[in-house]
Amino acid sequence: MTDEEIRFHQKFFENCAKDYRNLAKELILQLTEIKKIKLDEDFPFLTFNQMKGSRKLSRGKISDWNFFIHGYHCHFINTTTKQEIEAPFMFGMDFGDLDPYFFLLFIETNPAYQPLTFNIQDKFKDGERVVKIMLELGVFEKMNSNIKNHSGIVVKDRDQVEIKIFNEEKQLSKQDTKFNILKLFRFKRF
Image 1: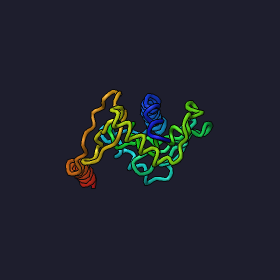
Image 2: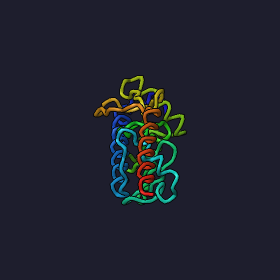
Image 3: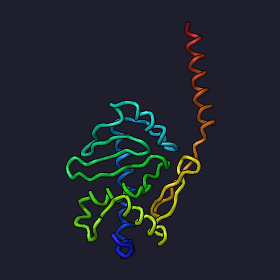
């Protein structure tokens, strides 16, 4: 894929980024609803990190999608169409972070986009160039994540979502308080 092809198809890539964000959010919400998971909307990664340790919770099937929670993403693959998407969960309730490789994987496997009018040679290298050029064109922009000094790339034309910065000390003190209260109740029972 050439730089000229990327510029020529900028509207296509913008629409793909919007589709990516919408589908990722839809699948994450569907997963939490079907599996009856209480999603921490400020810090979704806290919810999904708890699930990663359990083979039963970290993988499975919801409707027509198999899922696997790993790293900072949940991988979904459609059992019928074989479409793939990696839903990021490090950006509050914004699931549109565009990892270069995962973004082109989404485009390449999405039946609605076929046949493509350009060739993807290397999903990572071509994806990096797509993201770089779309940033230069002002169609994509950087977005902070829940973790200080970490950011991602998203489509600029979107509904803005507040993304809170995770404060480990504050979170740990909340957990300590809950732990101490539980310890106190246990003590009173005996």
